[in-house]
Amino acid sequence: MKALVAYYSDTGNTEKLAQGVYEGIEKAEKDILPIKEVKEVEDFDIIFCGFPVQSHSVPGKAEAFIKSIPAGKKLALFATHGSLRGGPLAIEAFYYALSLTSKGTVLGTFGCRGKVKSSILDALMNKDEHRSWAIEAQSAASHPDDADLEDAKSWAKSMLAKAGGQ
Ligand SMILES: Cc1cc2nc3c(=O)[nH]c(=O)nc-3n(C[C@H](O)[C@H](O)[C@H](O)COP(=O)(O)O)c2cc1C
Image (cartoon, rainbow, N blue to C red; front, side):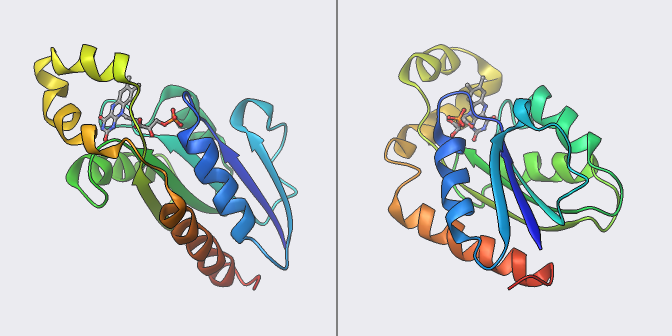
């Protein structure tokens, strides 16, 4: 079993979560790379793909990568977001990410909160379409934290087991 952890991260939160996912992968060959450095995915049995939720959706670079995954390849999606864990804004982004994949390829999803840069929070507070999540996001300042990383490790293990690897 070979696993790839591929991530897109602007301010480091998703990269930190990707490290947690990577550490949770045991009993498998593994690699971790930013999406822009991924050359091929054919060699991997399962791809963990991480992105930050942006504007309730998936950033363009992650979107292009998810779309490029060949049909039938096992995929597990993770994300960081400023809004509450399990809340509608994050769910909306995961639904969109799922819509980019071939049916039946996604084994599961995992999301946790990620600190939003204060300069960005201040700017978005002034925009009607972003204000609701920006207010919510103020309490994400300590995330991803150790508990998030432990949850990510457990999730990675369960995804690998589902893929038949551990
Ligand atoms: C332009 C922009 C738009 C964002 N939009 C959302 C959003 O719609 N919902 C949300 O929960 N968080 C949103 N966020 C917060 C990020 O998802 C969060 O800070 C994430 O952890 C950043 O991850 P990164 O450090 O890997 O880039 C947004 C952040 C930026 C910069």
